[in-house]
Image (cartoon, rainbow, N blue to C red):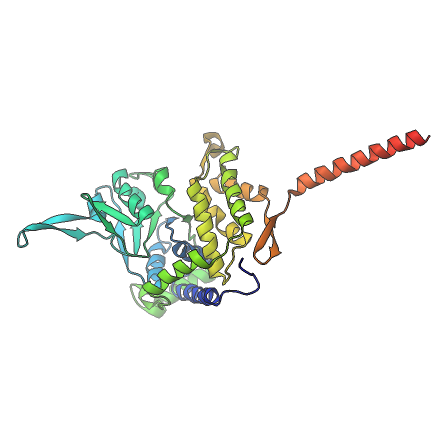
Length: 365
């Protein structure tokens, strides 16, 4: 059993490194800290991220800056209607001098792959990423090739421009750990800061100014530390399972989250604990990522969509309904019973006591 009073020194050091990485990204990219934290959590947890946002909000800058800070290579693919699977994976080319075919590797052979406007490519091209995202391998003409570690897909799509696009199928969406949005700058000061940094760095590619905090080997070790050294109490595991099931049982949902959504919650929750310098997961780690990890896995009834209900609303209501585990110390948790149920039980007991008292009074008379 992991004690909550004595933090693993390696985890504490990793948390400090994560803080440094977030600061390094913030020095270049002007954005909300919680978005950067979730992006880092997805990477540590071995997941992929889909950014659904308007053009010009710095998604490409964020991906390139993030890659620089964690010390990993990155490639960018602009998805278009005529893009073919071989343009991403690579293809075998005949080499006359050698008298044999040799593989010309595609851009997927990297650590961070930016799939820009992923929904502009046809389904068969989108499907080229499925095996890579799940198994970290690809198959070309019957030959299987392992991808580098870490491997992460960061994809973007425009939520308002639908002409000439191909909506991502559920099987593809389900492979993304998070669906995030960077959003517009939250104040005039943020807008000023963006312009000021453009003047300060005086470079076309601002990501080149980012400070490297990790290298590839160290980041892989960070992922391994997250998998093996972060304690998750049984009640937290049950809490995750109840959240996932809650999305399936919600009255507004046709389809709820798959079990893969629960795995995403578990892995990202452990990563959040590591980022915060803890070697144990608390309910707030799960709450912080629940909407981003589950909402894109929920399909709503058509009538509630027309009423303006969003997938995020369903997940929020599930979070409100599911009892939250409370700490008992030493990394152990218990579940608080539903307060409304407690009130009903208390009212029934009070009513029973009153009836018994009345009966006793009548008997004495």
